[in-house]
Length: 355
Image (tube, rainbow, N blue to C red):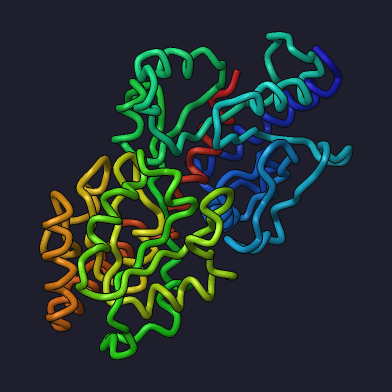
């Protein structure tokens, strides 16, 4: 055992005693968490746990148009010498996991156990364009110390259970998304909004063909916000800041979600937090969030979506009622406070069970 690993073991024993006494409550100091930039607004919320995140530059870079870099999120080329890492958190299942292991264990490419636990948090579903069964098998081949998922649906699809994994559902910062929003919704304009990056090239998962069919109807203007590059550059533009995106959510009369293969569209939940009534497909986890006709509309096909977009545009009282119910759903079931508490419990549990 290396001196660093030995020191780590002693520290973990001491911290476990603190966590045991606190019943998995906050420890006496913030954790040092090694991670990688993946989902900016999700990770921005994760930083509300109060821990120190050290994000290694590997692959994706943090895009500040999606969210500013929090003060406790440090983008680094290597682990700082003065920092003793407590846990690794990866939002992807790829060579980043091996990179983290190699850096911490000092055994590049070998299977020696990392001196700290590695937690993998899964945001995606198996790609239905390929062999789903083989993907699930390959996913388990990459060794980690703990697995967590963004929803029970997500976990079940990968073949895990409550016995061998955890679930931390999304948390939405309603204090931010509600800011400047009025209960009367008098400032809403007569258009239907969708927020999707690279929409034309992601038909298989985001339902671009479905959106085109709905948007071909002369119901009202249909607006898409999102980054679009390559051959489709110019199709849509992203909001330049969270504040601008919030204004867009708060201005739209209807939020149209056509996703086909997403565990849970965060943008849909953000729109709900802004009181924007949602018309959506009923795929994946969405029926767990949306109760048709109460806090949103679940539509079966393009014809159904057209009908409900028309209804909400023509009946502002109905739109306000559904939008307000959607906002309350996010506040009550997907609050940032619950999200932070769940993550802190998971961090301490993972470290406490690490052997």
